[in-house]
Image (cartoon, rainbow, N blue to C red):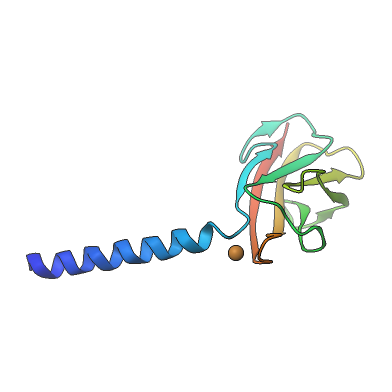
Length: 121
Ligand SMILES: [Cu+2]
């Protein structure tokens, strides 16, 4: 049993290394403003900052409210290439919002995506 356990542990460590190696080549969300799950005053812009430069054509965000309705947002990539900035085309009403993002790493084009939830007080 002991031997079997050590083989499984070795396999797990190998898999973790593979995952870490792949992740380092992808755009990973580092921070957001508003922060994930924060309750804030209506933000004028939403900024998602990544660990590496993005390809603007394939990097964007969408803003939705709880019932799935989309809010019109103008998106741009920051001058340093690492942030997606979304500017809502109107004041955000109090409620729960979900930011859905897609990012493509500039170095290898690999795409990543995710969501960030926040609440407007
Ligand atoms: Cu990659």
